[in-house]
Image (tube, rainbow, N blue to C red):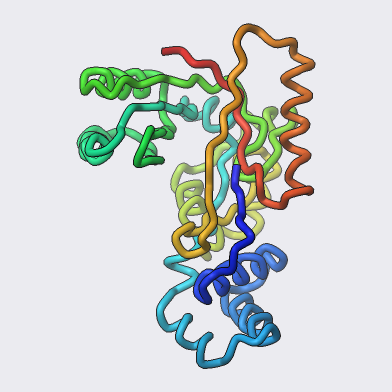
Length: 267
């Protein structure tokens, strides 16, 4: 979940946040147009031209602040590439956090992605096969990081996209080059991929669409993973109602719930 505070922001953070909001309401516009509209908004609220010039001279919105990439359907990824989402919770307090970073850099061969959230108790997010996840678990155990493995049972929301039953029924006959997917993940607006091809990938359930990954250091926002733990088996109706409630938070508190997973702790 993502939470926003109501404190005042330095000009750089104000610029970035305004830029993001402008872009999200004008997704098909070029970066230069979004930047121009952002500067108009800031000027209207009293930010001087000199202050805006100082900000734009110090930061590069397109390269350093945001990343626009395709969101791969996790159900397609699992079925066609045998890659699933995995979470590990590890004890990496204090100096152990840096030791964990060093360890992961040495064992990332063949792994798809690592993310560290710390520096207290840390979370590792990993996309890979079950065999790769088991090897990573063994490495963490042998290094005495006391890992807990969270097995993802289903994904209800992924990067802001609600994964309905239809999203799980992607076209199994649609063939797509891994190079095309990798290109779109890196740059959704790549000129190497036509708009028609992106439309076909969405219609066939290969990708869900595009997303914007922001630099939290620039925007000043806080991102948190919030877990709700239940002991014992819950009726399906209860979990469905809870999921429905979480998804309904987004219109009330915009951009709050970006991902929703249901999982069990295996180790």
